[in-house]
Length: 79
Image 1: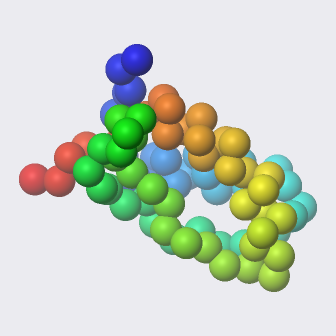
Image 2: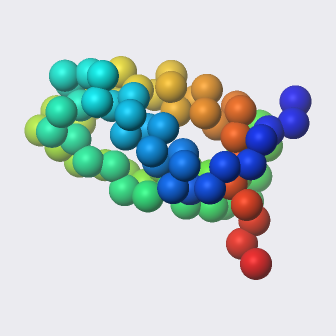
């Protein structure tokens, strides 16, 4: 499947919108989206580590959402 291209800022906005839906994520912070060589699935980005009062519960909630984003989108290759 071909992934659409989104900027790191667009993906981060999707992530922040999703975290706002979950009380487990209200005190959590996510870093930026960063590029890497495509992995075995073809995805070329990852989310920087976040932090918060109960980070593990937040990650549990949003990891499936992040995985769906990674299936659907890549970010532009660096120049």
